[in-house]
Image (cartoon, rainbow, N blue to C red; front, side):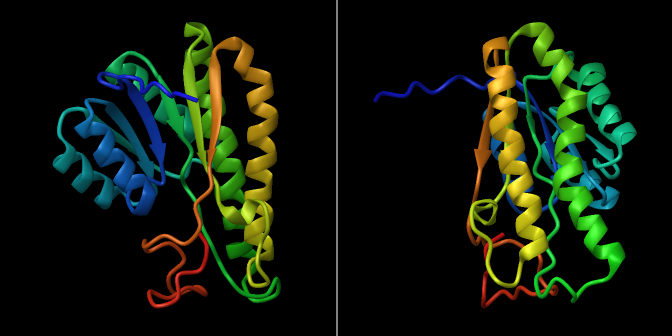
Length: 207
């Protein structure tokens, strides 16, 4: 099968979890290809540094994308600054490794909300623009844990299973309307993800 690469020059892409790891690398690569990016994460200081480095084809909205109002602000920033939305990359994620009993209620709830609710709400915010155009891409960054989790990541794996199930159903809903839904499911990557909460630089557990 032959695949034809699309020209991304001028495309407007929303990325959550944009200040580190896969999100930051994707933002840099997309701007280098001529895209305009709208970045979201909780850490405003890092977002400012990124936009300063990436230049005028980047803007940011700081906040928690699992909050619907924050996700709507991100989508509005894309429209206000660049006129449209061509793709959304729900990449924000938290990982706490260990037993189901190892972490606080607050940390467990934050992981579940960020990983799943953050995915749902940023897509809901960005989707109307893509549906109006009958064209767009949703690229969900999940994990191999979404297919089979290890023995130290039951809650995390559950959030990734949720993303996988959501993506499959959403693609069946949207494909005929011109919006494609894809999953990226990495294994261990050399990022700061989950460092200090069950993962070390020398032992890169699956993300």
